[in-house]
Image (tube, rainbow, N blue to C red):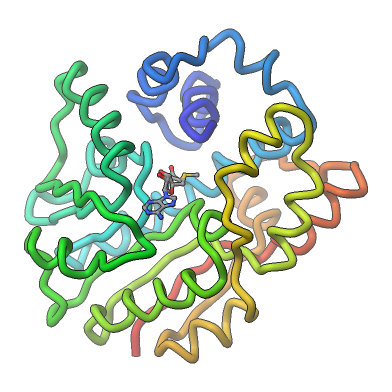
Length: 271
Ligand SMILES: C[S@@+](CC[C@H](N)C(=O)[O-])C[C@H]1O[C@@H](n2cnc3c(N)ncnc32)[C@H](O)[C@@H]1O
């Protein structure tokens, strides 16, 4: 679904980013490009596909800025994120990509078929984020004593609030002072509201992947408690800054969710 959104954005005039691999993932995943607009032509899809480019561009800008000084990037739950390939990251930077073995294998197959080459060094790290992911990350070469840049996009609904808190502890323990973190924050309430908006076959499939997730505390105190100075951004303001129309959904359920989730784009610096 995320790749489909990125493929659609990449094909637009004046896109906020171009992901040259997104359409390949969609095709390899068995989803016909033409069917995106029909199978998933729901109010959720319209809302998600106007928001997704804003979130993607926000995190692109964060990562490009962070890699001007930081030499190690960790993308938590990287999924079909192709920033290691499509962003002009300096060659000295290593991008660690954490996700499940199945996801990373699927991704590699598609990237290899395209002959894709990363801009710097890239290290896929197969893990279960509910288990020990720190040891495989260290074995792949990550160095906790030097600053790092972390990205957590599109994940928090897939883990329980307890696992999300443990995940942030794990990130914080491995982040030297001056490290940076950007995430898409979702409260427990936002995930519960999101669950009421996704319905039908599409919604059932999507919700089967969620783990009752979100975070029990508001973003800033949560990050502060873990040692981060955080700033949150309003999605609608970001969309306007990118000259992109992101109309309020205009549906009571989706409006409530959009309201709860609107300050979900976060950047933080480790004290
Ligand atoms: C919606 S996708 C977001 C992917 C990517 N961050 C992006 O925005 O394109 C959620 C990702 O979380 C991964 N994920 C969910 N639960 C996980 C777990 N327990 N361990 C590792 N990865 C997990 C999935 O495999 C999937 O790639």
